[in-house]
Image 1 (cartoon, rainbow, N blue to C red):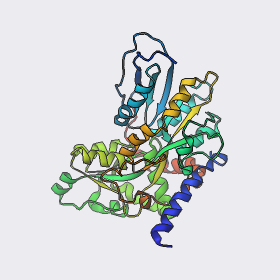
Image 2 (tube, rainbow, N blue to C red):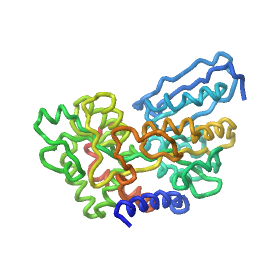
Image 3 (cartoon, one colour):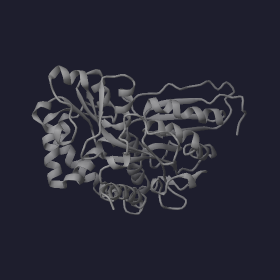
Image 4 (cartoon, rainbow, N blue to C red):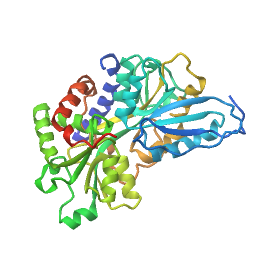
Length: 375
C-alpha cells in the first residue's frame, strides 16, 4: 500500500475514532418571512445582521448557538428561510470556546434549542454533561459514518472538517524582504519575531486544534519545547479563530495562524494573502450539530437539524470547506490542497479529549501573558 493510501486510511480511521469518544470523553403560513436575528454570545463577538420582518408574529421560534463564521451564516440560512418561512431563527454566534462555556454555564437552564457548526470535540464535552438529546435527522444515511456519533440515534452529526492554515500578507513580507513561511518549523525562525498572531486555544477551537496537533506530531515534551519557541515570535494570541487572518489581511501583523476557510476566502476575495497549509500537516476538527436537551424541545429545532444536513446546504458548506459530511458534486474550493485528506495531521481525538483541560491549563500558565485583553 502506498504512503498516500496509508495516510488516507489513517485519516478516515481517526474520523471513525472521534465517533467513539462520547463514552470516554469528556407549521405556519407560507406567506410569512423568516425572522433571523443574530446575537453575539458576548459583547465582543460579531453579530450577523440577517433579520427579516415577520409582521404576523406567527410561527415557531428557535435559538441556535453556533461558531460558524458570520459571513457563512447568511449564505447557509438562505435555503432554510425559503423552505421554512414560518420559523424565526435567533442566531447566537461566537468562537468555539466561548459557545462551549456558555452551554456548560447554562446546564441547569438551557437557552439554546439547537447547536449548529460547533467543534465535535466541544460537543463531546457537552454530551458528557448530559446536555444533548439524541436525534437522527432526516437524511442521516447520506452522512459519511466517520462524521457522526456512533450512537443510534446519534447525539451529534457533523457537517464538515476544518483545518489549520497560515494567512501571510505577501505585501508586508516583501517590504521586509522575508520569505513566506511554509511549515510550523519555519514559524520559529528569528526573523519572524513579533510578526505572528495566533488563535488562543482556550477560547478558540482553531487555536486548540493547532496546539493539540503540534503536541501529537512532536510528542508532548518536544511539543511544548516547540510551543515555547513559537511563543518567542508570537505578538498576541487572539480570542477568535478568524481574527489572526483578518489582522494579516489588513497588514496589522504579517502572519496569522488561523484556518483554511478564512485564509482561502481572503485570498480569493483579492486580499494580499498567501494561504499556506503547513508541510508537516494541519490540525483539524469536525463542525457538528446537536439537539439541546431541555424540557420544551420544539419540533422546529428538529426541522432545523433535518435541513442542516440536507443536500442543498451541504453544497453551500462545500463551497467553503474541502471535506464535507455529505458528499456533493461541488469542486474543492480553489486554494485548498488538491488532496485535503492528505493535509490532515494524525489526530487522536480520544487523547485530545482526555487531555484537553490539562493542555489548556499548561498553555495558559506558559503563554497567557500574550493573550489579547478580554473586554
